[in-house]
Length: 305
Image (tube, rainbow, N blue to C red; front, top):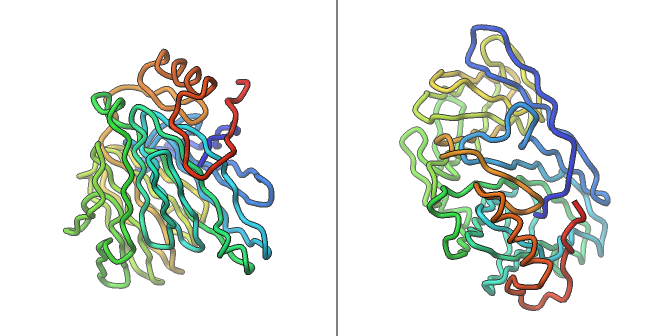
């Protein structure tokens, strides 16, 4: 999905001797009847592991004949990770990929030195009223892979491993968790887990992953005696284990990974460790030097700022 400028998410630090470093409250914005809540980047936390961007899309309801239309736009230096809870999005890119993503599946697009793509609601989906609810994240690539060859990988729902224990279930979307290993390959150590806790269930998080956070998607969780409602990104201190408890049930995303190999600059849809590389990408998009997306006649122009 294309980046649009938004206010930084609000953050509240913690002074307690507990595993929580900060709690981020995403800023919500409406993009034509479709609400997006952006948790990263935030004022006090720009990244969590390789995650430089994290959006909750919806939930939204669309009438017959309507849907989303994110016109072709470019990316460099990142991988986009799209994961849906409800609905469907049709992805097209300049590699010639045409792939519908549905709930539980994973679309991973590696931009590398440059790719363009669009995200739309298909004509079939528009025939009836429908819902859309999902998450999209951007993973910064390691410096050594920022100029890698662009690529796209789709992993269907049934390829993602699941684990269950004492009222807690988890789908290991990316990385390794509780002995399960995802087939989704990323260029940097990454963890992304979709977990559901029944009322009274608990989920322990060890400190093996260097940088970790939990995004509460539904319900609420208690951590070190504090309650965190849906729509909160709870970021943990590195090296501190934590236990999540859900007295009333909850659904959440565990995300993180190794700390990045240096700072990243983010402008519009471009991510890089080098400001000059972003300037070059701006010029390339303005001049039409990105490969086109087949069967698309529109595009998003370079913003003024």
